Length: 166
Image 1 (cartoon, rainbow, N blue to C red):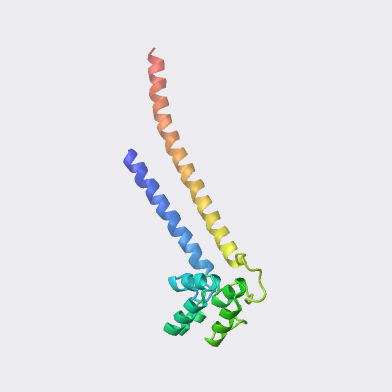
Image 2 (image 1 turned 180 degrees about the horizontal axis):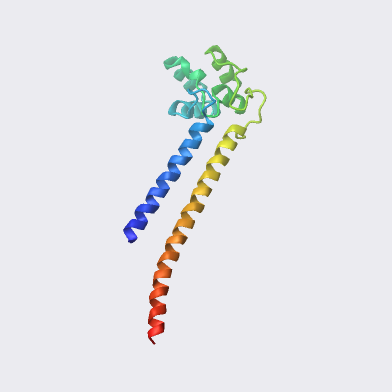
């Protein structure tokens, strides 16, 4: 019986994970499918924000398309260069094909958003994911409470019969 409860809870948590993933997919359905958090976007972010411009040049020599990569929120190297006030990187990226007029998931360019803040798109996505996870936690708790009540009722009935015999 205990093993069944653990399997049931494990299945429920798997369902939570699937629901959260599904929400992320639905929320991103209207965005460019090439926008994703990848090893390249992470490396570009780190190189640009740390003002490692020689490393940036080397990355772009190896893969010029790296100048145009975009993270899941639609931001990319040009946003990070502006955020870090890395003017040399801005010039390097422009020469490699990046554009300051591109828009992120909120429709903002690298020049017209508040740096260091999450996009509204990402805030909404995280809020939706948290809401779904909280709802699933509530359902799991209700199911667990119901299981406990069922067990208690059986025990209580047995206890009542013993009390009646005394």
